Amino acid sequence: MHETPLTGLVLSGGGARAAYQVGVLRVLCQLRREAQGQQASASNPFGIIVGTSAGAINGAALACQADRFDAVVDGLYEVWRNFHADQVYRTDSLGVLHNGARWLTMMSVGWAIARWRKWRPRSLLNNTPLAGLLQQLVPMERLPSMLARKHLHAFAVTASNYNSGEHVTFYNSTQAIKPWLRSNRLAVPAMLVHEHLMASAAIPFIFPAIRLHHDGASAWYGDGSMRQTAPLSPAIHLGAQRLLIIGAGRMHEPKVAKPNDATYPTLAQVAGHAMSSIFLDALSVDIERLERINRTMALLPAAAQTTLRPIQTLVLAPSQRLDDIAARHVDSLPGSIRLLLRGAGVGHTEGPVQGAALASYLLFEASYTRELLALGEADTWAKKAEVLQFFNWQPNESASVPVATPLALADR
Image 1: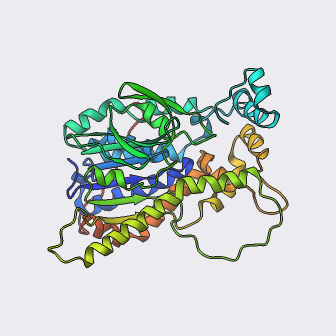
Image 2: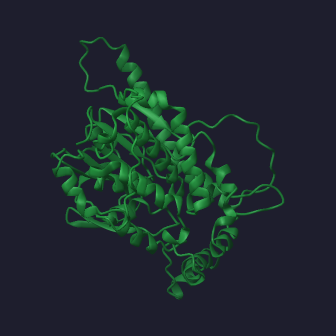
Image 3: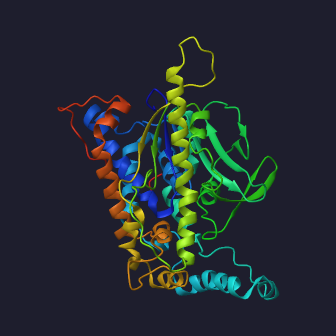
């Protein structure tokens, strides 16, 4: 059974940056075992799990195996700790040539020639390996059982409808929850499958869109971080009384003097800036909005009539710039991918590595993901007191701290 009050876990998008989330979760599990003992390792502390993009994949693994929470986190930790890019997208020369080179050629020679030669590449990279990884990592067939057995209250995945321009939250819950409709975003109750995860994680231009069906119609969907103006809204609509939010980038960048660079930005620099806008900005703005509402609620008299309710929040986000970490690991990418990205401006020049922001989303390599895991752990230990207070976990010095057995990928 999940813990009360009903706690929502919000996992943001960010491609390979999502490794940070698992480092955070690993320490949360250890802190809970220290406070509550061995019996806590199987229960799920999050009644509501909401994920976007790569966060949707992490969240789905947790939701579908909510009856063995700590073991799933350890299993995810092992996957991210030993990641290779070819588990997410094709890195062989043939695969890269078929997608990436044709896509770049199309961009350079024009749509007319591309149509004449019937070249219709859908993305820069071919992410068919990800579908195979999801089959092993996320047993979606267990989700209805987790809901029926009350190990979970609700799970939601977000995606962006390329046909209508709407941001859509697909959700499944133990009880009927009325769908909500806001400007350019809506909620749809659905039987969630792997295709929803593939759609939510389809980074624009990088990975192909996925066709999803609901309400007797179908449409093409891409990454759920696009047009996600209110990332916290789904968890609140689903009934969360407090929110743990794990970001994939620094919420507030320090103000530092920027060098006066007269060089025109590369395609990779522009793309990295766009990625940060898609994956990071909306979450920061929504957290600030929620904090303002909470402050306003605190000023209202107890007898005031309002539909609003205060939501307790705890935000855990990287204390370091992930772009800078990625810059140290660009060379760990497969040669074919380095060559492809070099054409866009990613790599070494006379000065520091250029285009590291773009690379930070595609660096599914162990050297990078291990550093993000370690950062997630360190940041969470640094906020131990806040975590314990948020969950109301009382430190128990005498409690034994078991080591959870990592869940094998084939274990369903």
